[in-house]
Image (cartoon, rainbow, N blue to C red; front, side):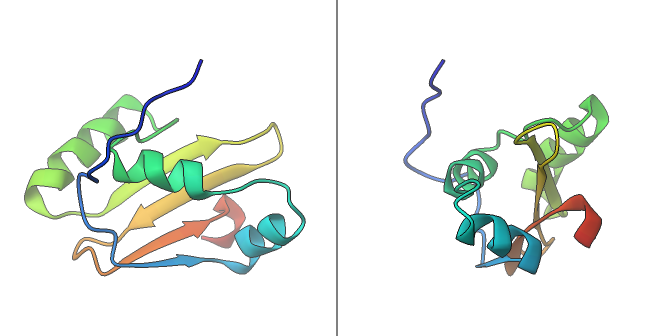
Length: 97
């Protein structure tokens, strides 16, 4: 099933950075994180638990940190974190946190 992405993000991501682990996966053509970044910007928080989903929904209104979790494969999970002030969005592996 293909999901539609909105044309307007729900928030401004600030500077977008990828950690060394994510960069290594990109360079090995393991995956392209752009799809997941778009989901994050659209407010699709991926595989977070219900409490974190609600916290993200509240953070959109009150300016707190946003966290998305995407299980790419059994071995690879991508976290995307946007800081409370929307200055930086970081794509990282859980082991890099």
